[in-house]
Amino acid sequence: MDNLSSFFQDPSSHQVLLWLAGGSVACFLASLIAIPIVLVRIPAQYFDVRVPRTWMKHHHPALKILGHVLKNTFGAVFVIAGFLMLFLPGQGILTMLIGLSLLDFAGKRHLEAKLIGRPSILGAINRLRLRFNKSPLVLARGDSN
Image (cartoon, rainbow, N blue to C red; front, side, top):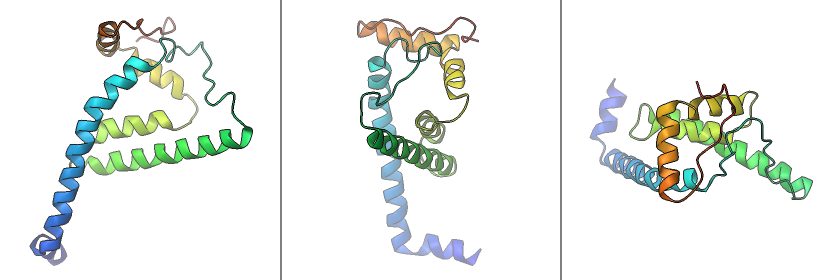
């Protein structure tokens, strides 16, 4: 307990807390800008599990492997950071969801389709897409509940 009280009394710890708070605000503002851009730019069939995703399809195999390693590494970092943000200032749940979307794991596409397919979420996303003259998201029948 003495270590905790000494941490808050140390002037340098106040600076660390200010940096953490500033970073949290910056991440929040970035998410307010980035999420709508991503939701408008993704293809209408992105969450349709019947349509295969071919990420980096026309790249050299070594670049594909490097791309997958980097994407999964960033995903793991986002999941860990999101977990920490559950206890620190920040968008913990949102950051974890972004991290999960970057990770490759079995059943991921069905989980994404189930989350996006909730009527309130799908309706909000499709209203946003409509404002930018984009077609609504398409989901496989039976994946919207």
